[in-house]
Image 1 (cartoon, rainbow, N blue to C red):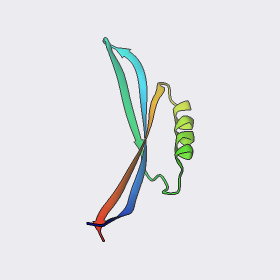
Image 2 (cartoon, one colour; image 1 turned 90 degrees about the vertical axis):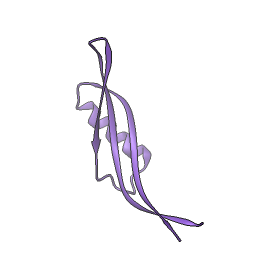
Image 3 (spheres, rainbow, N blue to C red; image 1 turned 180 degrees about the vertical axis):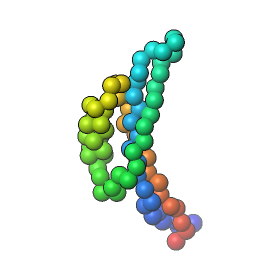
Amino acid sequence: MAVTTDFLEQKLQIRSNHGMVDGKEKITSRTYGDVKAAATDADIYDVAEIIAGLQQPVMEEVIKQEMNLIMPV
């Protein structure tokens, strides 16, 4: 069966490392929506670095979340 996809939305998630808390590594994440469909991966990473520079915990990972609708043709 042939299918097609239709872009719905894109989000940026930044995971931060707070270090060891009570003997366990504490990782938190924050998600930012309304990322333009035309934004490249490099653009998204650059924005994540700017945001992380304003925060105290160290940036651990940058995740791009895409949501697409898959439909039969």
